[in-house]
Image (cartoon, rainbow, N blue to C red):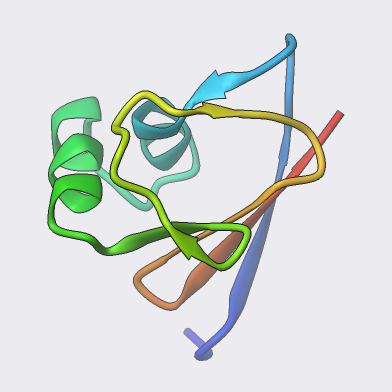
Amino acid sequence: MTETDTIEFKLNGDHVPLCDLLKLTGIADSGGQGKALVAAGEVTVDGRPEARKTAKIRAGQRVACQGRTILVTA
């Protein structure tokens, strides 16, 4: 795995909760682990730390966690 692995995630609706996005992309094994990563301050959205576990992530946003970046597309 390289330092900046990028995962492209295609939205099915208007948004996806942050903890679910981490689970769906395989960064977290479960929604609970996704929430723990957010609570630990390991997640950024568009370069800013994100503390809301169920923040609405929309198309065009970038989520980074554990050296991986998720690019959310419509």
